[in-house]
Length: 297
Image 1 (cartoon, rainbow, N blue to C red):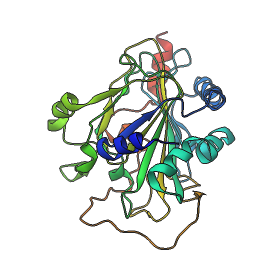
Image 2: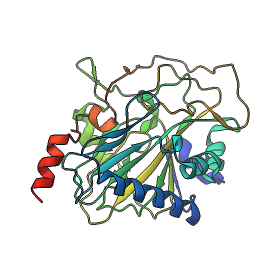
Image 3: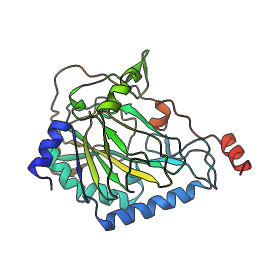
Image 4: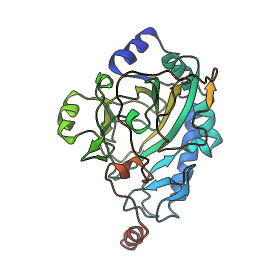
């Protein structure tokens, strides 16, 4: 699936963009399901649905209303959607993951991050691995562009080469899910903005420093995110985004032998918040807020 040049870029920069890695059929099916969930959100005033570990499946931004839905995340859609499970377990992008991690692969979790027009949700600079630490670093993140990703609608930003440095995601002994804000200006200056067409896929090392701004356009920016590990990578802590398929082998063979990386690694707590956005300090929709917003329309 991946060329030698693409593999070299992934190793050196920590990411690679593969054009059209998701087929037109896959993209249409994924978006049809997602459009249905966004429409369903109109009948809810606060987060709803239950994940494998009792958190919310559907996460709403403050200001959400039936007239102006603000669904910002769907957690582990592969747990209940045959379409998402098929694409993420059997689709062409798994071939690329195999090129990056080897023939024996496990599914970890997935989610859809949603930035509809006028939504305020952003992604603060962070790395993914500290949220779900493993016994080794053979973990990659596939980010499927469900819409065209542009400079105006909140395109992903990555810092090339940053996957070689491990940053703390704690502040004053509290896990905040982001890197020290004193470093953000430097990250911004060194970052690359990843734009692309719907169906393009970013493959990113789980230690890559990345973030993205709010959507300031009239076009949606929706991103399907899935994390995979090598079969010999095992979790060091309970998962904060637990899927019922966590650790399921989707390619190759399972192993009972864990491969270990050297050096210390910071461990996250088992936090109660339903979404990453809450961990980073962004508010979540509440019933009273939603009713008030609806009353103002």
